[in-house]
Each structure stands twice: as structure tokens, then as C-alpha cells.
Image (cartoon, rainbow, N blue to C red):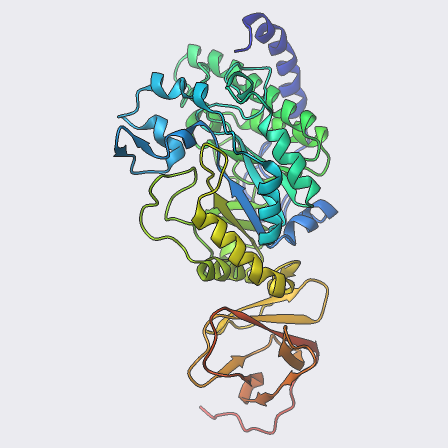
Length: 481
């Protein structure tokens, strides 16, 4: 752990850091807002810079949960923890001494970051979020602010650097997961009830700032930070600190992307401030769930992070409950993109650094589909068209192409479409057969049928609709009511 003298010397600089942050001008947000906030949202609406445009167009991402908890796989002495495996240290049956010394056995001899990155590339993911430190506090990089790191394990080598370098080489953008909550650090507090708690947490806040600075300086390829463990009262009561820390990190790394899980306003609100405006660059409230309608995302950028089993993030020896199939994963991807978001699928490698066979299979099968159909996923957005039961629409950003990602073909083989107002469909064709136009049968009120075979589909397929501005002229007499 960091020495007390270094803490004392740095607390002075932290004081100046907080003071400077508090001088940031508050932003006038909208006429409807009723509270003047120093530490609420600093922007209304979406970021419009190039970095955020890239994020918005990813479509498909990968999450990786890996650490000391992978040694246990959710099991201790033949008993299974009925929860997310990375939380096993908090289980009443897990002696802390047993867990806290387990890093001495963490030696992933089969870990190969290049193989990981190539599997992700084949799957078609555009960005990865990697766990640098989870709630247990164990660092997968050699942090100089604690001894509880990969450098003191039998493995010794910097895992974060290997992941960042390998994925960047494959053209996959890297985001670093960081848990603020740290069970290993004696200065962590769940709440601040005494002067001693507050003093300890001041030291902890400096520790957190130092580690985040270290990550951004050591891994400059990092595109953004993904925060966890920020829901406790101690962090929620630190709105001024979290605000100024976020701004500080963005001065270190211009263009850095940080989601809405990181900070709180001065009233302890997370994700959205006391005026209901999103804090952060995109909404992170969609964990293992997907919005039902576009209205549910309130005009924000957003993504969904999803597990393959019902609630398995870190490696579990037994996947409990339902395991999602590749087609389910593809449908979730299409659904998210159709509502203007990204879909991120989690993987939990074994302690030796290998993926379980089910994960490898899904990655390959999803990748095989993406090789053919990725045009309907990458750089696509919400169309505003009326959703139909056959699947999902996506629209290529800046183009006149709308994609129908078809999952459910009706027994009639007739796929109904109803374009947005003042939009006409010029022609339709299968993405795999661009030279062969499909017939459009006009219906009332601007709708049409596209006819396809009613049988024989084992995977979702994509129909491309080329559109133009205009409106239908119809001699049909409207019903008189």
C-alpha cells in the first residue's frame, strides 16, 4: 500500500485540485430546470465530437471479466455461490484470508492476448471493455499505489498492457473497467458517518485519482473508462470530487469517454442529476436489459451490457439457469442498434486464461453472421419507422439505406413495412443478392408487403431498402368514421 508520508504530501495537491474543480462554471441547461447545480450535467444532448461519433457507430462490443475470482469459479469446497462469481469474496462462506491470499496462485499460463483479440475480431466486435480492477481490489497492472497487483503474483507480467496492445493491433478500441469500490483498501468506506470515516475516505479518493491517472498515462490507447462500484453513500456524498475528477481525467486524455455510472451531483443523484439531465457521455442504466421503445432512452446515447448465462460475469464452473443461444445474442444486437444503442456481450475467461467452449462457439457463430450482415449493424441508427413483428429496422447513418433484420417470418411469407412520414422505398433486395430486386406490394396508408419464402430460415437475414424523400399519392378512399 501507499506510504502515509506520500498520502500527506499529496493531500495538499488534492485540496488544490478540488478547489480548482469547484471553480468550473455551472452550465445553463434549460428553462424547465428548477435547481442550480454546480456538479450536475455540463451538457444537454449528445456529444458531437469525432470520438463520440465513433462510439455511436460501434454496434457490437465485448466485455471481459477476469481476475482472482476466476480461480474459484463461483465454488468453494464443493458449494456454489448463488450469485455473480466475481462477488464470491462477499459470500458469508468465503473466509477473507482464503480469498485475499489466492492471488499467490494466479498464474494464467495459457493466457494469450493476441488469441483473445483475434477471436474478438472474428466475432465482429468494434470495442472491448476490460476489467483492470474489480471490487476485490486486485490490479491486473503493476500499480505503484498498492502491493495487491499482478506484479506480486506468480504470473508477474502486466496483463492490462497485453490486452490493450493486442486489441489495438487488431483495430478494436479499448475501454478500461475500474471498480471504485475496493474491498482490499483499508480506507474504503460504504458510508461516511464519523470524522474518522471522512478522513479515511479522503485518502481513498486520492488513491483512486492516482490509480486512474496511472492507467491513462500507462495505456494512452485507452478510449474511455467504464466505472463500477459507485452506488454506495460514500461515493454519492462526494459529488464535488467526482465531478472535478471526471473533468481532470478528460484534461489528461482529450476525447475520453465516460459513462453515467461514474459520478453523482451534490444531492447524491447518479446517472441523471437533480434536473433529470444525463451526467456522463452515455447512459449506462441498461445492464442485462434492453429498452422496449426509443422513448425509453430519452434521446441519450446508450449501450446494453449482457451476459450469456442469466447473471454470469466472471468465470463460473457451472452456468446457472438459461444460456443464451447465438441467435438470441444476434437478436439482442439488432434490437439495441435499432433503438440507437450498442450491444456489449460479456465473456468470463477461466483462471488459466482460456475461454469456455460455449463462449468460443458463440463468438464464432456470431462472427460468421456478422461477416455477411455487419452492414446492418455498424454505423447504424434508429429509423423512426413503425416496428413490425418480423424483426428490427436499422438505418445507415448519413445514407438512404434502411435494413430489415428479419428474425420471424410469418407463415404467409409477407413482411409488412411502413416507412416514416415523407419517406418512400425505391427498391428492396436481400443484402446477399443486391442485383435481384424484391417485389413491393403497396397497401393502404403508406404500407407495403415484401414477399419472401415462408420456410427454410435457420438464421436471421437482412433485406436492404433504398429510400428517397417523398409521399405516396393514393386514390384510396379513407374510411369515414
